[in-house]
Image (cartoon, rainbow, N blue to C red):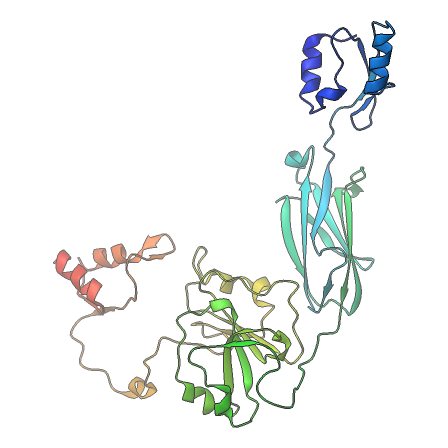
Length: 372
Protein backbone atom coordinates (compact mmCIF):
# COMPACT_ATOMS: atom_id res chain seq x y z
CA UNK A 1 0.00 0.00 0.00
CA UNK A 2 1.14 3.56 -0.59
CA UNK A 3 0.29 6.88 0.96
CA UNK A 4 -1.77 9.56 -0.76
CA UNK A 5 1.30 11.83 -0.91
CA UNK A 6 3.20 9.27 -2.97
CA UNK A 7 0.15 8.91 -5.20
CA UNK A 8 0.29 12.68 -5.84
CA UNK A 9 3.93 12.37 -6.83
CA UNK A 10 3.09 9.48 -9.08
CA UNK A 11 0.34 11.57 -10.70
CA UNK A 12 2.99 14.09 -11.75
CA UNK A 13 4.51 11.47 -14.07
CA UNK A 14 1.71 12.36 -16.58
CA UNK A 15 -0.34 9.21 -16.17
CA UNK A 16 -3.88 9.91 -17.32
CA UNK A 17 -6.60 10.23 -14.69
CA UNK A 18 -8.37 7.26 -16.24
CA UNK A 19 -5.54 5.01 -15.06
CA UNK A 20 -5.39 6.37 -11.53
CA UNK A 21 -7.18 4.38 -8.79
CA UNK A 22 -10.64 5.51 -7.77
CA UNK A 23 -11.49 6.45 -4.19
CA UNK A 24 -11.35 3.53 -1.84
CA UNK A 25 -9.29 1.37 -4.21
CA UNK A 26 -6.02 0.04 -2.87
CA UNK A 27 -3.05 0.23 -5.20
CA UNK A 28 0.11 -1.86 -5.24
CA UNK A 29 3.38 -0.96 -6.96
CA UNK A 30 6.10 -3.19 -8.27
CA UNK A 31 9.59 -1.91 -9.02
CA UNK A 32 11.49 -3.04 -12.09
CA UNK A 33 14.15 -1.72 -14.47
CA UNK A 34 11.71 -1.36 -17.33
CA UNK A 35 10.20 1.82 -18.64
CA UNK A 36 7.44 2.98 -16.31
CA UNK A 37 4.17 1.53 -17.61
CA UNK A 38 0.90 1.05 -15.73
CA UNK A 39 -0.05 -2.57 -15.33
CA UNK A 40 -3.67 -3.25 -14.42
CA UNK A 41 -5.60 -6.54 -14.62
CA UNK A 42 -8.92 -4.76 -15.14
CA UNK A 43 -10.34 -2.53 -17.81
CA UNK A 44 -12.59 0.37 -16.80
CA UNK A 45 -15.69 -1.66 -17.71
CA UNK A 46 -14.47 -4.63 -15.67
CA UNK A 47 -13.96 -2.40 -12.64
CA UNK A 48 -17.49 -1.05 -12.97
CA UNK A 49 -18.91 -4.58 -13.03
CA UNK A 50 -16.83 -5.66 -10.03
CA UNK A 51 -18.04 -2.65 -8.04
CA UNK A 52 -21.66 -3.41 -8.94
CA UNK A 53 -21.07 -6.97 -7.73
CA UNK A 54 -20.11 -5.59 -4.32
CA UNK A 55 -16.38 -6.02 -4.49
CA UNK A 56 -15.06 -3.07 -2.47
CA UNK A 57 -11.34 -3.23 -3.20
CA UNK A 58 -9.79 -3.50 -6.65
CA UNK A 59 -6.05 -4.02 -6.75
CA UNK A 60 -4.14 -2.37 -9.59
CA UNK A 61 -0.47 -3.02 -10.26
CA UNK A 62 2.04 -0.60 -11.71
CA UNK A 63 5.61 -1.14 -12.78
CA UNK A 64 7.89 1.62 -11.53
CA UNK A 65 11.41 2.42 -12.66
CA UNK A 66 13.80 5.29 -12.19
CA UNK A 67 13.92 7.42 -15.31
CA UNK A 68 17.47 6.74 -16.48
CA UNK A 69 19.58 9.01 -18.68
CA UNK A 70 22.49 6.86 -19.80
CA UNK A 71 25.75 8.27 -21.11
CA UNK A 72 25.56 8.41 -24.89
CA UNK A 73 27.31 9.69 -27.99
CA UNK A 74 25.35 10.63 -31.10
CA UNK A 75 26.49 11.25 -34.66
CA UNK A 76 24.87 14.48 -35.84
CA UNK A 77 26.77 14.46 -39.14
CA UNK A 78 27.15 12.60 -41.44
CA UNK A 79 23.48 11.73 -41.50
CA UNK A 80 22.86 8.02 -41.93
CA UNK A 81 21.94 7.21 -45.53
CA UNK A 82 23.09 10.54 -46.99
CA UNK A 83 24.80 10.74 -50.37
CA UNK A 84 27.52 13.30 -51.04
CA UNK A 85 29.88 14.26 -53.85
CA UNK A 86 32.31 16.07 -51.57
CA UNK A 87 35.85 14.78 -51.09
CA UNK A 88 35.66 15.92 -47.48
CA UNK A 89 32.95 15.33 -44.91
CA UNK A 90 32.29 16.82 -41.50
CA UNK A 91 32.04 14.43 -38.55
CA UNK A 92 29.95 16.10 -35.85
CA UNK A 93 29.14 14.26 -32.62
CA UNK A 94 27.32 15.13 -29.41
CA UNK A 95 27.86 13.64 -25.94
CA UNK A 96 25.05 13.74 -23.40
CA UNK A 97 23.53 11.85 -20.52
CA UNK A 98 24.39 11.16 -16.92
CA UNK A 99 28.00 11.95 -16.09
CA UNK A 100 28.72 13.84 -19.33
CA UNK A 101 29.55 16.95 -17.33
CA UNK A 102 32.38 15.21 -15.45
CA UNK A 103 34.10 12.93 -17.98
CA UNK A 104 37.62 14.11 -17.16
CA UNK A 105 40.75 14.51 -19.26
CA UNK A 106 41.12 10.76 -19.87
CA UNK A 107 37.91 10.63 -21.90
CA UNK A 108 38.53 10.31 -25.64
CA UNK A 109 36.37 9.88 -28.72
CA UNK A 110 37.80 7.35 -31.14
CA UNK A 111 36.93 7.80 -34.80
CA UNK A 112 36.88 4.84 -37.19
CA UNK A 113 36.27 5.30 -40.93
CA UNK A 114 35.75 2.25 -43.13
CA UNK A 115 37.26 0.05 -40.44
CA UNK A 116 40.39 2.18 -40.06
CA UNK A 117 41.05 4.08 -36.85
CA UNK A 118 41.80 7.77 -37.43
CA UNK A 119 44.43 9.28 -35.13
CA UNK A 120 44.72 8.82 -31.39
CA UNK A 121 41.25 10.11 -30.63
CA UNK A 122 39.74 13.47 -29.74
CA UNK A 123 39.06 14.89 -26.28
CA UNK A 124 35.46 14.55 -25.14
CA UNK A 125 35.15 18.26 -24.44
CA UNK A 126 33.48 20.27 -25.80
CA UNK A 127 30.55 17.88 -25.67
CA UNK A 128 29.53 18.82 -29.23
CA UNK A 129 32.25 19.27 -31.82
CA UNK A 130 32.90 18.92 -35.53
CA UNK A 131 35.97 17.56 -37.30
CA UNK A 132 36.63 17.42 -41.02
CA UNK A 133 37.84 14.33 -42.91
CA UNK A 134 39.72 14.92 -46.17
CA UNK A 135 40.29 12.62 -49.13
CA UNK A 136 37.18 10.49 -48.77
CA UNK A 137 37.18 7.73 -51.44
CA UNK A 138 34.21 7.03 -53.69
CA UNK A 139 31.69 4.48 -52.44
CA UNK A 140 30.29 3.62 -48.99
CA UNK A 141 31.68 5.61 -46.07
CA UNK A 142 31.21 3.90 -42.69
CA UNK A 143 31.82 6.26 -39.76
CA UNK A 144 31.93 5.14 -36.13
CA UNK A 145 32.59 7.12 -32.96
CA UNK A 146 33.08 5.49 -29.58
CA UNK A 147 33.68 6.81 -26.06
CA UNK A 148 36.87 5.65 -24.35
CA UNK A 149 38.25 6.22 -20.87
CA UNK A 150 41.97 6.05 -21.52
CA UNK A 151 42.45 2.74 -23.37
CA UNK A 152 39.20 1.18 -22.16
CA UNK A 153 35.87 1.70 -23.90
CA UNK A 154 32.97 2.99 -21.85
CA UNK A 155 30.35 0.33 -21.19
CA UNK A 156 26.79 0.97 -22.21
CA UNK A 157 24.44 0.55 -25.11
CA UNK A 158 24.75 4.13 -26.37
CA UNK A 159 28.50 4.79 -26.05
CA UNK A 160 29.05 3.90 -29.73
CA UNK A 161 27.38 5.56 -32.71
CA UNK A 162 27.58 4.57 -36.39
CA UNK A 163 26.58 6.10 -39.69
CA UNK A 164 26.73 4.92 -43.29
CA UNK A 165 26.80 7.39 -46.18
CA UNK A 166 27.91 7.15 -49.79
CA UNK A 167 30.29 9.36 -51.71
CA UNK A 168 29.26 9.56 -55.36
CA UNK A 169 31.15 10.69 -58.43
CA UNK A 170 30.64 14.46 -58.84
CA UNK A 171 28.37 15.37 -61.72
CA UNK A 172 30.19 17.05 -64.57
CA UNK A 173 28.97 20.12 -66.36
CA UNK A 174 26.28 19.31 -68.88
CA UNK A 175 27.04 21.10 -72.15
CA UNK A 176 23.71 22.15 -73.58
CA UNK A 177 25.22 23.02 -76.98
CA UNK A 178 23.41 26.33 -76.95
CA UNK A 179 23.20 29.47 -74.92
CA UNK A 180 21.65 30.46 -72.51
CA UNK A 181 21.86 27.98 -69.63
CA UNK A 182 19.40 25.11 -69.49
CA UNK A 183 18.02 26.10 -66.05
CA UNK A 184 16.62 29.13 -64.28
CA UNK A 185 19.15 31.82 -63.46
CA UNK A 186 19.23 35.16 -61.64
CA UNK A 187 21.93 37.34 -63.25
CA UNK A 188 23.91 39.94 -61.38
CA UNK A 189 22.59 43.46 -61.98
CA UNK A 190 25.89 44.51 -63.62
CA UNK A 191 26.42 41.39 -65.73
CA UNK A 192 26.07 41.44 -69.51
CA UNK A 193 22.88 40.00 -70.92
CA UNK A 194 23.02 36.55 -72.58
CA UNK A 195 22.42 38.13 -76.00
CA UNK A 196 25.68 40.09 -75.65
CA UNK A 197 27.87 36.98 -75.68
CA UNK A 198 27.35 36.42 -79.43
CA UNK A 199 26.55 32.71 -79.00
CA UNK A 200 29.90 32.11 -77.32
CA UNK A 201 29.37 30.20 -74.08
CA UNK A 202 30.99 32.27 -71.34
CA UNK A 203 32.41 31.15 -68.03
CA UNK A 204 29.67 31.18 -65.41
CA UNK A 205 30.55 32.79 -62.07
CA UNK A 206 28.22 32.66 -59.06
CA UNK A 207 28.48 35.24 -56.26
CA UNK A 208 27.11 33.05 -53.50
CA UNK A 209 24.02 34.26 -51.59
CA UNK A 210 24.71 38.01 -51.70
CA UNK A 211 27.97 37.48 -49.81
CA UNK A 212 29.64 40.41 -51.65
CA UNK A 213 26.82 42.98 -51.67
CA UNK A 214 29.04 45.93 -52.60
CA UNK A 215 30.66 44.31 -55.65
CA UNK A 216 29.85 46.32 -58.79
CA UNK A 217 31.52 46.42 -62.20
CA UNK A 218 30.99 47.51 -65.78
CA UNK A 219 29.41 44.90 -68.08
CA UNK A 220 32.08 45.51 -70.70
CA UNK A 221 34.73 44.28 -68.27
CA UNK A 222 33.12 40.80 -68.43
CA UNK A 223 33.02 40.86 -72.24
CA UNK A 224 36.64 41.99 -72.64
CA UNK A 225 38.08 38.94 -70.86
CA UNK A 226 39.77 36.23 -72.92
CA UNK A 227 36.86 34.05 -71.86
CA UNK A 228 33.80 36.25 -71.30
CA UNK A 229 32.19 35.92 -67.89
CA UNK A 230 28.52 35.66 -67.03
CA UNK A 231 28.05 36.74 -63.38
CA UNK A 232 24.96 35.37 -61.64
CA UNK A 233 23.55 35.51 -58.12
CA UNK A 234 21.53 32.30 -58.26
CA UNK A 235 21.65 29.26 -60.51
CA UNK A 236 19.38 26.23 -60.31
CA UNK A 237 21.88 23.91 -62.04
CA UNK A 238 24.90 24.73 -59.86
CA UNK A 239 26.98 22.01 -61.52
CA UNK A 240 27.14 24.12 -64.69
CA UNK A 241 28.93 26.98 -62.96
CA UNK A 242 32.67 27.31 -63.54
CA UNK A 243 33.42 29.43 -60.50
CA UNK A 244 31.68 30.10 -57.20
CA UNK A 245 32.82 33.02 -55.04
CA UNK A 246 32.07 33.27 -51.33
CA UNK A 247 32.60 36.62 -49.62
CA UNK A 248 32.93 37.25 -45.89
CA UNK A 249 30.09 39.78 -45.76
CA UNK A 250 26.40 39.49 -44.79
CA UNK A 251 27.12 36.60 -42.44
CA UNK A 252 27.13 34.02 -45.25
CA UNK A 253 28.98 30.82 -44.24
CA UNK A 254 31.16 28.77 -46.55
CA UNK A 255 30.00 25.69 -48.46
CA UNK A 256 28.10 23.08 -46.49
CA UNK A 257 29.51 19.59 -46.08
CA UNK A 258 26.84 18.18 -48.39
CA UNK A 259 27.31 20.69 -51.24
CA UNK A 260 28.50 18.99 -54.47
CA UNK A 261 31.74 20.13 -56.12
CA UNK A 262 32.22 18.97 -59.72
CA UNK A 263 35.83 18.45 -60.79
CA UNK A 264 35.80 21.31 -63.31
CA UNK A 265 34.46 23.83 -60.79
CA UNK A 266 36.66 26.24 -58.83
CA UNK A 267 35.72 27.65 -55.42
CA UNK A 268 37.06 31.05 -54.36
CA UNK A 269 36.99 32.76 -50.97
CA UNK A 270 37.21 36.55 -51.10
CA UNK A 271 37.69 38.77 -48.06
CA UNK A 272 39.37 42.09 -47.37
CA UNK A 273 38.61 42.25 -43.65
CA UNK A 274 40.73 41.80 -40.53
CA UNK A 275 41.66 38.21 -39.67
CA UNK A 276 41.43 38.82 -35.91
CA UNK A 277 38.89 36.77 -33.95
CA UNK A 278 35.49 38.45 -33.87
CA UNK A 279 36.07 40.22 -37.19
CA UNK A 280 34.51 39.47 -40.58
CA UNK A 281 37.78 38.03 -41.88
CA UNK A 282 38.50 35.75 -38.93
CA UNK A 283 37.99 32.59 -41.06
CA UNK A 284 41.06 33.58 -43.10
CA UNK A 285 43.04 32.43 -40.08
CA UNK A 286 41.49 28.93 -39.99
CA UNK A 287 43.23 26.50 -42.34
CA UNK A 288 40.52 23.86 -41.89
CA UNK A 289 37.99 26.32 -43.35
CA UNK A 290 40.19 27.37 -46.28
CA UNK A 291 40.92 23.77 -47.32
CA UNK A 292 37.60 23.62 -49.21
CA UNK A 293 38.63 26.44 -51.55
CA UNK A 294 40.83 26.32 -54.64
CA UNK A 295 41.72 30.01 -54.54
CA UNK A 296 41.89 32.67 -51.84
CA UNK A 297 41.77 36.40 -52.50
CA UNK A 298 42.50 38.81 -49.66
CA UNK A 299 44.76 41.69 -48.72
CA UNK A 300 47.38 39.14 -47.58
CA UNK A 301 50.33 38.86 -49.94
CA UNK A 302 50.45 35.08 -49.57
CA UNK A 303 46.90 34.60 -50.91
CA UNK A 304 46.29 33.13 -54.37
CA UNK A 305 45.81 36.59 -55.85
CA UNK A 306 46.12 39.51 -53.41
CA UNK A 307 43.56 42.28 -53.60
CA UNK A 308 45.31 45.36 -52.25
CA UNK A 309 43.90 48.73 -51.31
CA UNK A 310 45.08 50.45 -54.48
CA UNK A 311 43.67 53.35 -56.53
CA UNK A 312 41.37 52.56 -59.48
CA UNK A 313 44.06 53.76 -61.88
CA UNK A 314 47.23 51.64 -61.40
CA UNK A 315 49.30 54.37 -63.07
CA UNK A 316 48.86 56.47 -59.95
CA UNK A 317 51.14 54.01 -58.16
CA UNK A 318 53.99 55.16 -60.40
CA UNK A 319 53.32 58.84 -59.92
CA UNK A 320 55.87 60.45 -57.56
CA UNK A 321 54.20 61.55 -54.33
CA UNK A 322 53.79 65.17 -53.52
CA UNK A 323 56.00 66.81 -50.93
CA UNK A 324 55.12 65.66 -47.44
CA UNK A 325 53.45 68.23 -45.20
CA UNK A 326 52.86 66.06 -42.15
CA UNK A 327 54.59 63.09 -40.61
CA UNK A 328 51.65 60.67 -40.34
CA UNK A 329 48.68 59.97 -42.63
CA UNK A 330 45.55 58.39 -41.16
CA UNK A 331 43.33 56.59 -43.69
CA UNK A 332 40.15 54.79 -42.56
CA UNK A 333 36.85 54.07 -44.23
CA UNK A 334 34.64 53.78 -41.13
CA UNK A 335 34.41 55.35 -37.71
CA UNK A 336 34.10 53.70 -34.34
CA UNK A 337 35.71 50.43 -35.42
CA UNK A 338 37.93 48.14 -33.34
CA UNK A 339 41.20 46.47 -34.21
CA UNK A 340 41.18 43.62 -31.72
CA UNK A 341 40.43 45.17 -28.33
CA UNK A 342 41.60 48.64 -29.39
CA UNK A 343 39.23 51.34 -30.60
CA UNK A 344 41.40 52.65 -33.41
CA UNK A 345 39.92 56.17 -33.38
CA UNK A 346 40.82 56.52 -29.70
CA UNK A 347 44.33 55.32 -30.46
CA UNK A 348 44.80 57.90 -33.21
CA UNK A 349 43.26 60.63 -31.02
CA UNK A 350 45.87 59.91 -28.39
CA UNK A 351 48.61 59.77 -31.03
CA UNK A 352 47.59 63.22 -32.33
CA UNK A 353 48.59 64.71 -28.97
CA UNK A 354 52.21 63.84 -29.61
CA UNK A 355 52.74 63.95 -33.37
CA UNK A 356 51.17 65.70 -36.34
CA UNK A 357 48.65 63.48 -38.14
CA UNK A 358 46.90 64.09 -41.45
CA UNK A 359 43.50 62.28 -41.45
CA UNK A 360 42.22 61.40 -44.93
CA UNK A 361 38.45 61.42 -44.25
CA UNK A 362 35.86 64.02 -43.31
CA UNK A 363 35.08 62.41 -39.95
CA UNK A 364 38.68 62.22 -38.90
CA UNK A 365 39.30 65.80 -40.04
CA UNK A 366 36.48 66.84 -37.70
CA UNK A 367 38.03 64.70 -35.00
CA UNK A 368 41.30 66.54 -35.54
CA UNK A 369 39.54 69.90 -35.13
CA UNK A 370 37.91 68.77 -31.86
CA UNK A 371 41.23 67.70 -30.42
CA UNK A 372 43.21 70.74 -31.40
